[in-house]
Image 1 (cartoon, helix red, strand yellow):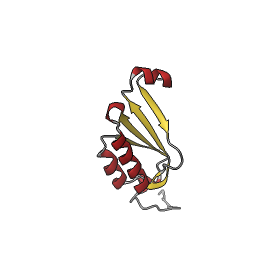
Image 2 (image 1 turned 120 degrees about the horizontal axis):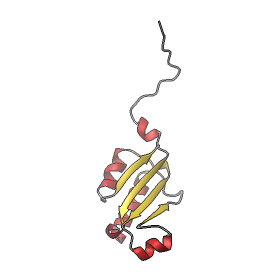
Image 3 (image 1 turned 90 degrees about the horizontal axis):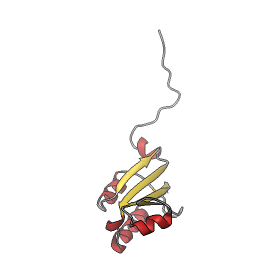
Image 4 (image 1 turned 120 degrees about the vertical axis):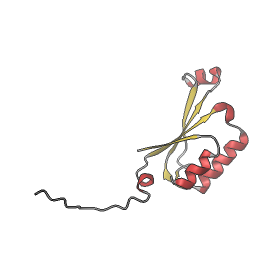
Length: 105
């Protein structure tokens, strides 16, 4: 009969957050304001960590999208200063800004 021997055991609590390579945040350009950016910065500072963040702005005006060489969206990779500790508190805070959040593994 076959045997199963474990070499390493990892608790499942928080495993998803520990395996995240990048956080992708998608926001609609018309909904971005000075106050929402200030709130986003506050969220990033509150949930500082090691995971890099990429922001995608959708519904960008044609002249801005053309200048960025895209078709209606602009993707920004944020400075290393804005790294996040993923988890439920961060997810809840970002959801309040009507942003779409995706963890990339």
